Image 1 (tube, rainbow, N blue to C red):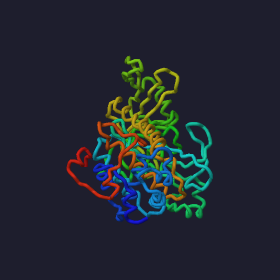
Image 2: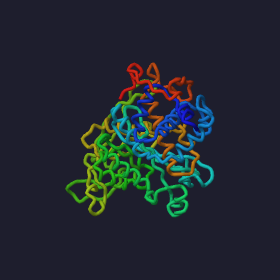
Image 3: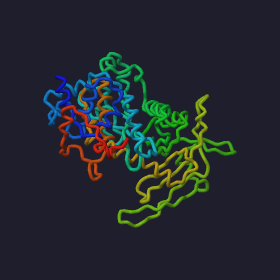
Image 4: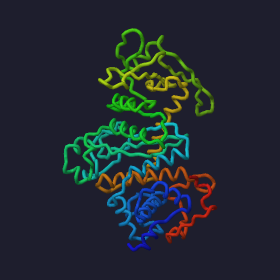
Length: 418
């Protein structure tokens, strides 16, 4: 495409998008990369249905030849997604009041065996075996919103042991053998090393995680505060003067004299308040059998048990390092993971995370990074009247943006925030 066609393939939404693009994609050295990034972001926000380069290029005012440029930007352009995601997280932290980090799993159904990272596994929520990619999405939670700012692609043994397959998909050797616990603790270490990012608690659902103890140990090494839901059989070691024995969180909470009851008020659907009991262990617990030299093993945790108010489901259990926080505060933080699941549903339905058709590891991360950017932009920059413009809604693209012009204008920049 000619230079003028590249400019025309990069629509915008005025000063808000330009400010966002300048901040998030500052590390892009080539102007063409920024223009294609803006075109891709615009298409993710406003094209309905599948978000593939070919389909996105059919949207006006993108020219028909844009499909090749969009495809090249995702699968061929050698840009580093890590600094883009760091700037995305920093933007969220600067414009909101984050209170937690959290993680959600996303299984992406795939046909065949050529998509990067594809393998067969059991979906723990449905019990069905699916052919899929397995992703971990890292969120920064603020208020009732969760912002996706990081991604990991989890490989299984069939990929780890096939070097030629790894080479064809351009998967770095460092990715081989990484289990979910490695991805979570590795990301936590990256967060801890970034001074612009908040040191807020990690809120995790470890009830279906085979490496729950490893995740907790890794976060303990980072000195990260945690609020983690654990399965009933999660092992713990009570602290105290007597020689303790390893037990489980459910068995621990069955000892009535060792627990305290807190009564919380919960509003029912009919508007009436109902009392909900929550039990806490009177003392603290630690992780059993810490690894040699691992000083995070003796970290004290508080145990919470929340029985089902209707008695139809088994109790739920949490471990938290926030031993001096009120029960209401801990459970409020725990709801961050529920908000993350809602965000995953929105990513699936509206931002194209299921639609990547490439076969390379960099291409997958490029596409997911752009989906995150579109989601964050949608949340942070609202349509007139304060409501978010739904993706796919009719939108008028400024003629100046189509021509590649830039109008700074003080009035045009109001309401965008920096």
